[in-house]
Length: 552
Image 1 (cartoon, rainbow, N blue to C red):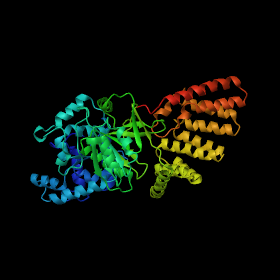
Image 2 (cartoon, rainbow, N blue to C red):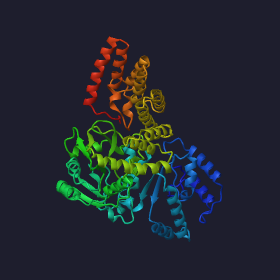
Image 3 (spheres, rainbow, N blue to C red):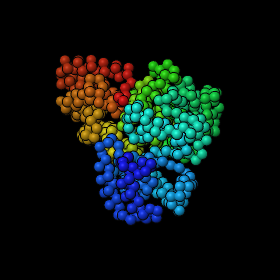
Image 4 (cartoon, rainbow, N blue to C red):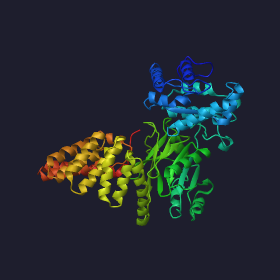
């Protein structure tokens, strides 16, 4: 935190002195130019870079938060120690610090509220912290992406424990935390914890029973978020889940992310340490796990995990399925929502489960696409630099049969800055659109551009080779087939498995050999053809027997 500290407040003395001078405490009037403040903060941080983490703490940072943000080039992590405004005012008045406590605290609260409204941050509520300081330390560790030793953890726990202020290490009734908006539960490392399934549901009476059955023996509670049910969905769910079912009403806002964030909040309110996200049209399959206790043991097996990724049954994509709560992660997006905020290693693969989705009727599927189309058209206008929305707009157009519009959206997604994996997958989707129109050279070009963005795509290498074959260039086709094999999962370095997004598994296994055998046959290379044919069959057989995912 940048010692020497000021008194017992663990606020760095040199920074504290500067802040008071910059803002003329207690008037809170700006006295020093912003450029001067930023330069000081940048130098202050650089002088303390010997440690893994450099920290700042001071109430007046509420006024200089933007200075810190710019000094760190947007790389700062934020933790807010929060109390209700009236409590903060009363505390300042009790200490007799300044006579104008209400104005000072109101100014600081409003300033930090405004700054943090669009920033990912951790809020530590004062009343909640007093009840369970250990679990809050775990939240801070997770937020910082830190990996302390167990001895360091225990030192931190012992330092902040306040036995006279702690009625219990676990919050049994979060509603008792008056004014608190962040609830805590017993740390998973200290107990087996509680697993809660959350299910968003409208009228789903025809499919809800099988969804509930697929998880009821594996979870402690099933929270059904009622977004406007008028049929017998709740009745059927209750007959299936019995006392495990909890129903909570939620006014639908045409925003899936908002609803999912609400479900996480309710899960924490019910004492969950893990929240399993399940839709009414999804079914869970558990592989190699005997019972709920073993499942919980596996979920708790790695302290760095923020959310476990679970594959679809065919392995074509993965979802964040089990989320460690309380959490800083948040769902974003009114449709095709994404869970954002995880650290680089915070979303490992969970290989002991998979899921599948019930097919929608043609009418229901088209209604979904039309609903998504309206949302995505709005999102791409208001957020034109967000590649995610362009990708899903392209996919929606593609499924609606609007190929020209789909291609345009995919190309935009592929060229926008941001997540390279998303850009490479969009390149593959655009290449398929070009290939469908027999525009093979354009398909090759955008596939090669996609590989520049992310070289873990055997799909793209195979696409270049396949288009080359269609143009009659067998030697180029063979060359690119081998490139696809080299980064694939059958005989390559398997780098593709480190991806977390969509994938086309045939390109990881048999498609390159399929391309080889046709190219060799047309070149009258019978020995090479027979070898490629045997490898094609073996690779295809392996794919059909395996579900692969990103290595944690």
